[in-house]
Image (tube, rainbow, N blue to C red; front, side, top):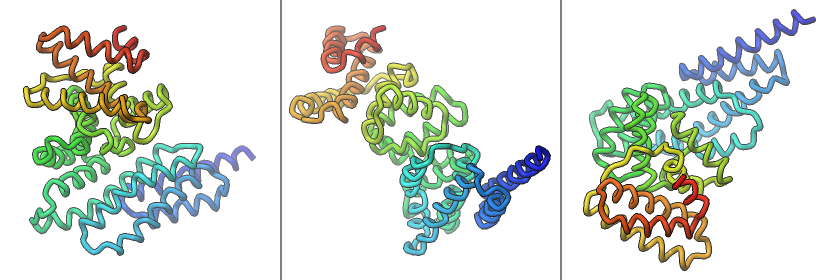
Amino acid sequence: MNTEISDQESAVGGLIQKAYDMLVASDAEAAQRALEEALVVDFDHQEVKYGLKCLNWWLEQIKRIDDFEAPYNQGVFILSQWRPYYGFLDHFEGHYENCQYAIRRFVSSTALDFFQDILGDGVNEYGPDLLLQVGRCYKGTGNYEEALKYLEQAVRFRREDGETIAELADVNALLAETRLAKALFREAFFLDPQKIDLYAMESELIIRLRDRVKKETGKSGPELCEWIPVYGCLLGVFSVKRELKPVELGRLKQSIFSLENEMRSSHDADGLIKPRLINRYFWLIDHFENTREAPGIIEETMLKIKIIDRSVYDWYIR
């Protein structure tokens, strides 16, 4: 009996691995057949059922690409389904990383095929949008060097776009360029946390920070994105800093002034405004610590942090 069970487990395990290999090779139909065969062997196998549900979810979405005529729009549509997909995954109790790795490779390769049709024509009418999407796809397929090439080009066009800079940071982290990744992530989350898709990030650097902040604060969605840079500072993850240019310092002070007014008048100040304001306070303090100017401003800013969130203040000074 034990031998029989062992043989069954071995057969199912082999079919699961075959399915994942087929997904990495972009053969979704073969992957589906392998998982269905595994389900016949063991109809109650949790990973098999999980893998089938995930694959079938994506196959249903891919059927919809005929609604879009241009290859660029078809590729963008596929990538746009990551957010609803992670919402779909929230309904599962378990998580199988090998399955998600294979799914990510399959989806990224599928989207990349549409974008490469455009690149092959030598026509770049989509500019940085296309560069960003291609870079994302190469990252998803595990080709980080190629992803870096496209994302660096995209950032040259979008020097103040948090979404693009976060993707570049993620690839640098995956390439073990940790110092640069930290600096870029800090920049991206200052510019616009709401544009950054946390669940599209693949590096351990940002995944661990995301999970830690979620655990510490209980926040999710837009609020989680705003607290990421605050805890990134407190935990020493966003530790690579730079001195601000005069025009940047002026914009930072104006942003702080506006947020302080919003916080005084808003009924939901603790939602998005407070963490956004605290992060800007951190940037202001860092600037004056680096330049060793105006120590009074540092003390004043520390007092403001203490007033709006004592726990953050206590953590910051310890």
